[in-house]
Amino acid sequence: MRIRQTALVFMVIALLAAACSNHTGLCASNTDDPTLEDLGVVTVPPAAAVAGCDAATAAASGVANTPCPALDGDADASEFSITQISSTERESVASALNGENDGSYPAPTIDLSRILSSGQPPDGIPAVDEPVFQNVAAVDWLTPAEAVLAFELDGEARAHPIQVLTWHELVNDTVGDAPVTISYGPLRNSALAYDRRVGDRILDFGTSGRFFNSSMVMYDHQTESLWTHFDATAVAGLLAGTELTTYPISTVSWQDFRDAHPDGLVLTRNTGHSRPYGQNPYRGYDDESSLPFLFDGEYDPRLASKTRVVVVRNGGDPAVAFPLANLGSGAEVFEAHGESLVAVVDPGTASPLDQLYLSDGYDQGAVAVFENTFDGESLDLSRTDDGFLDAVTGTTFDVFGGALDGSGRKLTPVEHLDTFWFAIATFDEEVEIMGT
Image (tube, rainbow, N blue to C red; front, side, top):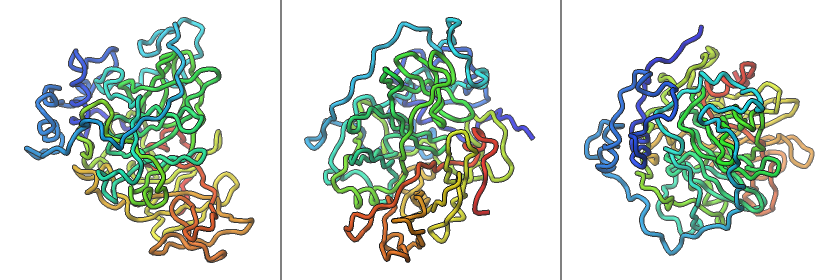
């Protein structure tokens, strides 16, 4: 049965109001796409954000006079920037943001009439284009259970706190020699990392203010093609059909990252924008009984739409999804695309979509997926108080796959998504459910 969402069951007013306050026109859409008002959603005027954090927070939470934590203030002496690889220049081509097509573009890969507007203009939710970092030891503003996005490339490890990504969704960055974008889609509870290189182009991404089946629609500033966050694919414009290279990224607790990467770097709240960092504008959004925001697809009845699953994808093959509720023992072996894999869940990471403050969310745990072999032998992992003990080698590994005994042993990570069931079922109707 096809169910079409006509009213929003959860209000994300604080995010919309705060983002709108930086723009004239009160967040009027630049297109004729349906807006939140068209969907029957009552919104709070952007002036609420101008009046201060309390008003915007109260609108979303129902709690009057909720105090706000410190916003981005003066630069701290411990903060620093990273030399960035320059993106290529804006090209003089027709913009998919405005529905333009000069006739030579590839055909859109989706039905563009199903792209819905949130009422935001492009970049109304501003990406972080000039990221500022601190060393792990200098960070005193994150709580141990707070969720961060952990990304490692070429020996460099970085934590991107979800308290920042919730309000910005995209970070255009450089790690080693690679220009990358770190993305977080709260409405699908999904994080992905992309390589920004497409042929000779080095792209950087912004938010378009639109969604396709509750998936953030990004656009690149170079060609203004439209891209879906969830599958890293251009869906309209000059680059339609192009797929970005993706990298493994995981959602873990600050304590997990700090313990495993004492020399790592942490994205700071010094973003150039004032937001109530540490607060959740999507309070209660991961309630399994609620419906997704701006979802216009079909619900797959095999699982509740917001069941949390770990997903492994492999090009054109059907994805494999493993419900997290079935990882109660801490480690489960499953087959995916002809390989034996093991999924693990480590307690101690607060859900960033639960309570008003991210640090107060229920314990959703941190999920990882590894190849189920080490030195040619199958693993036999079980969760302990310290990590994951392999009965074959006697080695205990952390959630990143690193040996805790200092031996340098390392499990091979597998790129995965920690997301909602409806998210993967929308993009892959043939997804297979494991562990049920």
